[in-house]
Amino acid sequence: MKVVYRGVEVEVKRGNIVEEEVEAIVNPANSYMIMGGGVAGAIKKAGGDVIEKEARKYAPVPIGKAVATTAGKLRAKFVIHAPTMEKPGPTTIENVRLATLAALKCADDVKAASIAFPGMGTGVGGLSPSESALAVVKAVKEHVDGGTSIKRIVFVGLGEDVFEAYKEALKLL
Image (tube, rainbow, N blue to C red):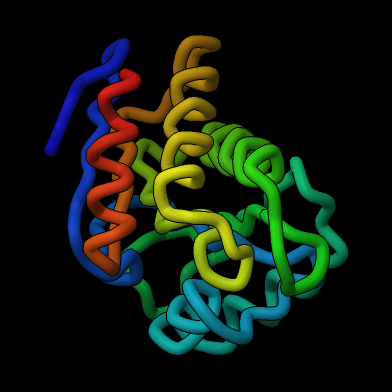
């Protein structure tokens, strides 16, 4: 499913974020940049330990900020680490919104023309895919409305639940 919002192509796909052909992929991180499990663990496994080593140099990263690192062996140029939680554990819809805005600003700062988001805060964070997807899409709308150099945004659902939640949330655009 694909829409164009204010000149930005926004797409929902089924798949694994580490395989996306975009310039930046988002890691819904913790503030300590420990890439243990979930999306972070998958990114580290596919891209190499270098990603975590580089990210840890910036720790602690507060919620509402994001940092870009190289992407190791991944197809992407950057991994954007946007904390949705301080330490691994439950998160909030507001934290997901702040993390999404921070990731988009970071993508603009590194001049990434394309960015991919997984489910944000849906694993360890404990949010439902639908509440997470709504928060992410609302934040994307807010960011794009304010002006951006990003040309393509991809929401990637590894599971059917995240994929369907993003498809439904995309109707907000």
